[in-house]
Length: 444
Image (tube, rainbow, N blue to C red; front, side, top):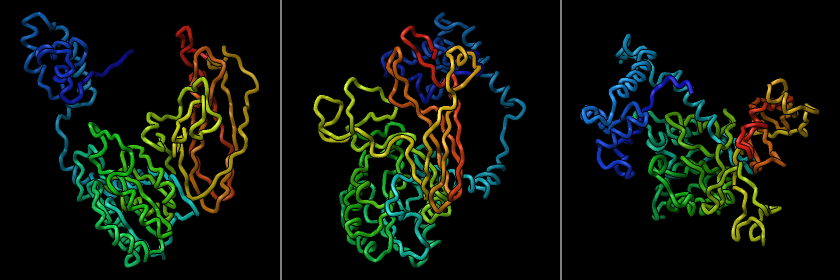
């Protein structure tokens, strides 16, 4: 393959060969790891304590160690670690959390938000509105860092409560309402009362940072604890409810999708969580993120992905309880929010896509002499500037092996002012259309 790097294990992975049952002790784990091509042992201390003995026993060759060492040293030389073995620690104070870095952190957070729902154009909010901020994640600086923020400090995080307080002053009322994981409803009454006296309600709900990441799997994808009950209690007032969801995974939000007026998926936005969310809620920044994974209606739909294979009896609609076709008895088959979904504060109109290439041969495709051109005209039909992500999906039929019902083959982001139009073109190459056929050849 021409790979010039080296292979390093994950944390204690060499030692964990024992738990996997493929090594009886650390010595055998070291032997199998190095002979399999793992050049560096991370933290198990298997190599440093066992390789010398393995060489004496003839179970590991010196030439194998030399080659692994050569690969590691080659990378260190390429990185200049021998000329500059130490870093300038003074750079930390000058660089980390500098204004330039904070601006990038805020922008990255803003671009990651996905507007899932915006009924009645409740967003963006107006600074003149009285806002009730409710939820266990509204002022949780630690959770904004997300999982594996090893060196992140919660003291450096600006929360949503802080940013909304700076913007709204006395027009903001904050009530926690509930904890992330609890059955205690003693805070519900104060939350409902705050919502009753507000023009709009922002609810900051979701998972803690330690509910996502390695070894933090869940069998239930709903909002944890009694958060859904609090959303329902507040929504019953009939006030506009903007639900901000913090999570490290797609959640199942069927009740929330009905009760909330707007839903913004914020993930775990980092140190500039508050400023990024405040700017987005009030329209200084427009949401432009798109989902990279589908949100299910129920955990029973998992695994759920957009590029699935068709069954022999696909249903004509996604309605439940259709006899003798692929459907669920008790749930629709489509996701609640599909892969690629994402709204913004304006609307767009597409013309019917045009295939520009009238004919083409497989030979021309494979020899890269031609592509399949596709064009559509995109128009901003709303009253605000906006960013649209134009996505191109294909489906191939009549192939020697089954192909997915939908495959993403390209996307382009464009910014359009109100009334502005722009033609977007895609060029499908051989690699976009190729797949492994019945003869196990990767071709068109």
